[in-house]
Length: 289
Image (tube, rainbow, N blue to C red; front, side, top):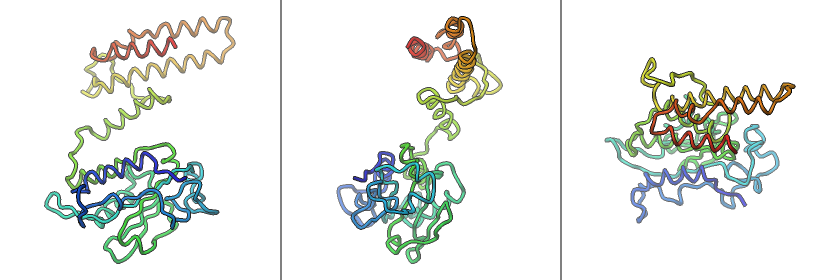
């Protein structure tokens, strides 16, 4: 049966945590759990609220983009948000202003909207509009006068990509969530490093001074140190791949020699003392595996 994926459940939980002001009581101005839906009810025939068991022939949520066709699973890939009204920062914020704010971010092409296929909404409660990344449609049915619909490309749902950043930014903008002290650049760098270490692929690709202080404070930061380590690992692994493709008399010995030069201690020297031992132990374990 069609499932509610973890990444959209996280968005649902985030919105309810900050817009359901009194979880113990139903209040007209609160966003209630029943108003934030992912899996379509029995009336839904096809569309992003349905998984592979409930899509139909020629379903627009599958056939209009290769991102949807290759990402089709049992997971639904949509989120409905109902009405709310909160006062924060001396202003009133509701479903209408929320929807218009999100659409504006999509129009601007911000990174945190790249997985959104469409938003169906009403800017003032009397007309229904649709922002469609593919430019196929511009309106929707009357039910969207009182709720806003978000469709996410199915490949992003299949990959479990985090969809909370846009909604977290909205809550921060209106003052319901404290601003994260970490810059977007630093967060992006750490995410890139995490993917390089645990998911394979290249590192961030910046040459930095491993001994510091370097030309600027960032060159001696923890992120920069780890970046340099990943750069060195990428270089050595590239050399190993090149050697493995050559007809060598004693290829295993040469490869072993390259690996031997990459000692945990040398790698750890590029890191702050507080992290050196942890990194050395982890890399030693991986090289010995």
